[in-house]
Amino acid sequence: MQLRSNRVFLQSMARDFRRTGAIAPSSKMLAQAMTSELASCNKPQVSVLEVGAGTGSVTAEIVRHLGAGDQLDVCEIDRKLASIIRHRLRNDSAFTAADASIRVINKPIESFERRPAYDFIISCLPFTNFQPAAVRGVFELYRGMLRPGGICSFYEYILVRKATRLVTGKTAVGERVAGVSEVVREYVGKYCYRHQVVLLNLPPAMVHHIRFPEA
Ligand SMILES: C[S@@+](CC[C@H](N)C(=O)[O-])C[C@H]1O[C@@H](n2cnc3c(N)ncnc32)[C@H](O)[C@@H]1O
Image 1 (cartoon, rainbow, N blue to C red):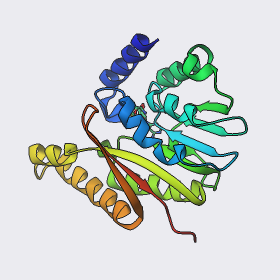
Image 2: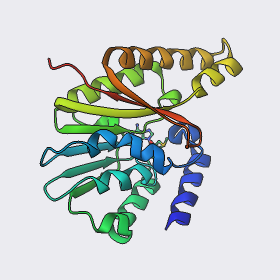
Image 3: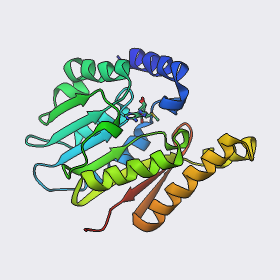
């Protein structure tokens, strides 16, 4: 199962690196950091959205923290990756034991309705490969999709944007990546209340947990 998942992940990376945005699935340590807020929540009937699930390395960790009455929506834009997750839901012991109700939604996050349906959004999107306006659009979508007090956890790879900007300089790519950094810095600066550094990941990552103020 793991070998097949890794092969599909690598194929997806080769097909469209901009969309996949990673050279390997997240490590167990990164998955644990991404789910640490969910893990410490003792509210009944939580509703969770995972965005950009890949082959399910973070999904498996989310599922460990869910029980009967909880709901997980797994959003993945890539058809093959979404079907890997559906397969794992039926056949992988990490998923088959789950009591929560789980749906895999093979659509881009941008097509989701902006209404407050989730207590947690666990976002694995490769923002570095997006346009700055698209990153802002996704953060604003998350703001609208979170219930009051809801939490969004997301990660960025440490130094990857800086390295890309050093290499690309004042090219269109360099300008785009600088724009993404600015947007991410703005949202982290305003709304992040906790960061976690995860060195045991390829590449090392920084997890941010953000909470939007109630309107
Ligand atoms: C960096 S990978 C993360 C995969 C997995 N969660 C992990 O941590 O190993 C990003 C994932 O986001 C998906 N993705 C990219 N753009 C997306 C979008 N607009 N909506 C939903 N998923 C998207 C990609 O197909 C890819 O599987």
